[in-house]
Length: 620
Image (cartoon, rainbow, N blue to C red; front, side, top):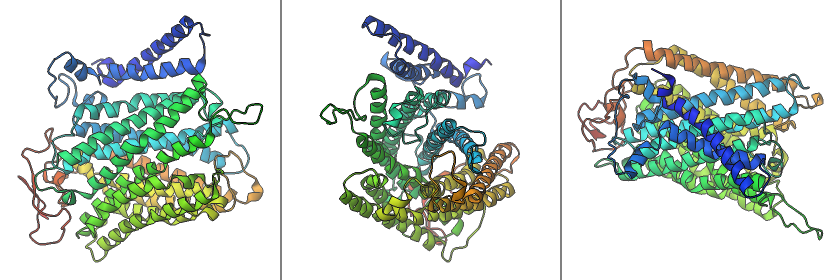
């Protein structure tokens, strides 16, 4: 079997071929228009867009649509490619939602490792004062790359959980639009390639890319801006697919208030993605066009009378944060849904306040659109706006508190068991609580004015993201691993992973907040020894390496257990959810016959209660 038989390899070849074509087309067009041929910004933008199209054509993402336009029937294909090993389907276009979910998840995990590696590099530099091995420019480039690579990893991780689980949880055979689902995954791959290429050109504005700083510097910004644009396009297309799937493909008897709570979380997330992601795409496209074509969107230009005839830097901040704060809830809502999904299983109790928990996800999504201005307390906008955004931000605590009280109510009096998924779920609650309790301090204008752009913000943000996504993501991997592979992971290694990572993260996050209160600024390569944070910075770095080692241990566990793990059986956790009532691993066609919902999803411990009716349903 040749390498070029793999869609991924063909796509990479198509990417660089498309890059060449795009560059040549722009050069020729500029010459024909009587312009100077070589204008790096414009030429590279043409190359990046053409490279992305070239990848998608070469990987085969357009094939079925092209045949359909020619009037050729294109039946949905199932199973491994003919004449090729089964594993090759994960390296090419496939329309099965389970395959796409694994593609998303593995890619997200890979990016998480890469983004974490960037963090370990600059954290090693910060372990003591003075410049050790990084200069200021390279330090800022690593910080910037860490931000977007890690955030892209989260978006792909969410895509993995949603694509694999949502159709199974509602008894659907697949997503509503399988071909669009595949396209939404594969558009991420050329985006990732562009993001990696940006490292070699260098860009150092931080992940926010605020102008006018981001309007200067190398062409690496263009690679980053278009990479995030295409990742955003993936989010929009994926959200459309998920919303239609959940609203139109539920089985008989599954009303919205009988739908698994994870699906509610994904529904709320998808609504945010569909309505807010355009703003980040628009702001980054405008930034790209200002750099390449000189359009004055954000860079202020003063005339002789002292009037601004150019752009407005604050316009970018408003566009950016109108997406990027709701994006925090895109990152955490699926994770909070995972917590609510797993707790009843290992507590053997009904989920406390199911309807309130379901509606709280929609409430968080709604209020999340009203709080973006708290990122701009120090930007110079009108002081009265600080009060408005302070109040709206504090209101987010209400629906979030509903979830916390539900979790406590579910745990109270339950018959708890502490396998690895449950440990990571409890760890997620503890870490998210750190992020939640530190949030009002930054939501309050008087304290934020002091702490803005300090390491207190770094500690708060990482606690929110790790508690809201990373810990639940790992809990989900361990929980559904037997369903995906048909084998159990190594429980001992899973618990070692937890007991290394959780205290390590507590130490890292609280220490980051401590240095912030002491005056440590973020995104700087060096600090004054007189600040007195050398010892704390060393602790943060050591904690970061402990966390990294624990994640590598998990990856080793997952890969080895797939071959030698104990056979799991169909339902090792005794779950009521539909996906656990079918064989493990899940067959190519998930459900041999349609299911019908006849009860409530989380009535654990209630004698005689049933959730679904289907052949081979497990007991409570």
